[in-house]
Structure formats: C-alpha cells, structure tokens
Image (cartoon, rainbow, N blue to C red; front, side, top):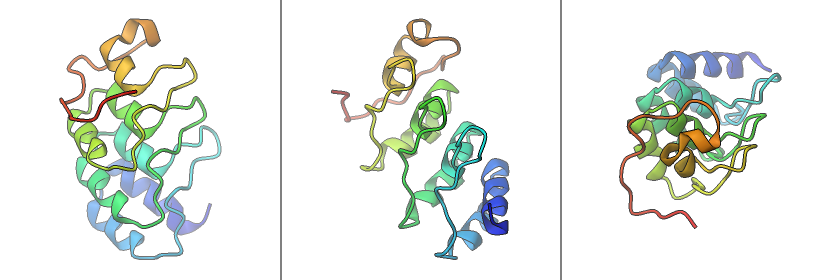
Length: 137
C-alpha cells in the first residue's frame, strides 16, 4: 500500500471529507485498494462506519467500483444494510452501478439479510433499508 492509499483509508474510516476530496483529486490513487487481511475497500470502510458524506463523495471518482466485496463476499451495500446505516444505504441505492443482488458467502443479498437477519446469520439492521424503487431479482 502506498502512502496516499493509507491516508485515504484512514480518512474514510474517520469521515474526514476534506482529506478524502483532496486525495481523490490524485487520479493515480487506487480508490479500490483493499486491506490485505480482509480486502475491505475504502468505500467499504466508509459504509461500515456510517460516513454518509464520504460515501456520497467516493462514487464521484471515475475508477471507484462500488461492488468490490471483502473476503467474506460482503459488499459496501451489504455492510451498510447489516449495520443499520440507512442514510448510507440510500446513497448507495442512488448509484446505478451498485448491484443489489450480490450475495455474501452465505448466499444472502443485502436486502434479504435486512428482511430476515436470522436466516442469514448473526446481526442485522433493526430499521432496515429505506424504501426504494429498485427491486431485487
């Protein structure tokens, strides 16, 4: 990992929007970098920490892939649903590139997980995702 990726990782985790914007201006930065242990991308980190402003900013980068899963196949949308970050879920569902049908290693999609947390493992968002016109196939 290069210095800028580490800084972006930390800025996304902390919700430091000004630093995220500054680092994303560098078109050479790898905005899809994932940590070596679990392969969590910077977008995944922002989603898992409920950093709405950062989640709004990152998709503006032309190289961002909002569907890169971590080691257990959980995507940024999945983790936002699982952790109950409804505002983050709204932002992600507003991006046409986000695939709502990508399952985790237990074969549960984010929407199925929210609707039936028991059948898809532990945890789950109590409030569920916001209503959306997007349907799961």
